[in-house]
Amino acid sequence: MSNKEKILDDVARMAGGAIGTIGGLRGQINEEIRLRVDEIALRMDLVPRAEFERVESMLQQARIEQNELIKRIEKLEQQIAPNTKAS
Image 1 (tube, rainbow, N blue to C red):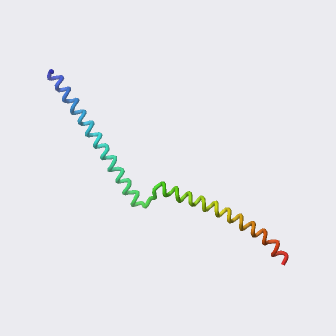
Image 2 (cartoon, rainbow, N blue to C red):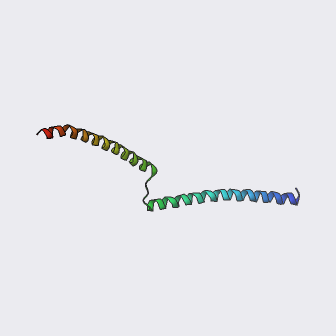
Image 3 (cartoon, rainbow, N blue to C red):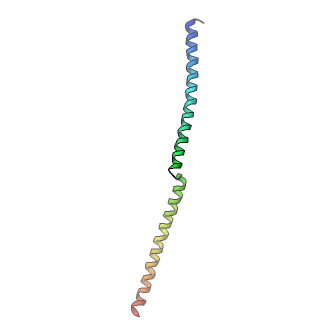
């Protein structure tokens, strides 16, 4: 093996090691960012998406029930109205 080949081999090994190190560093940076975002979300008192969707579903059901009750009240008022006029 000539000196030139040995140097190229060493450079290739160093580059491979650097890429591995950069990959590990990238994972650490991503994890650190994720932790920081979670901390900010906790301080802002944000709710998880699943909980928001659950409450939204409950609200939609309550609106449906409210509309049904309004219709029932209107129907009852119509039934009572003729009786009050006859008195």
